[in-house]
Length: 119
Image (cartoon, rainbow, N blue to C red):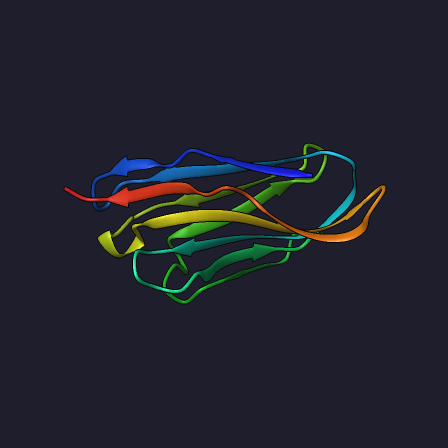
């Protein structure tokens, strides 16, 4: 199983970015999908999550600015980030709880994508 993120980059404060994550491999079903982030010198933190039924949760710091969505048919999850602030600068990681065809339940991480918010 592999999770691959894309869409990171450099953006000015107030700007927008859209991150995407695609899961591939011998996947039977994907349960909850998550976006985490880790800023330099800080612990990794949960940014947003979405269940297979579409229920979402957000960290207080990103509510009303970020939107998580998923496409169950394509095994993808996205994070639309608006009104970005310098404090949103971090490496963003995709994570998923899933059941594989061969190995059963698994929690899998992507490799991360850098988001830098700076003027």
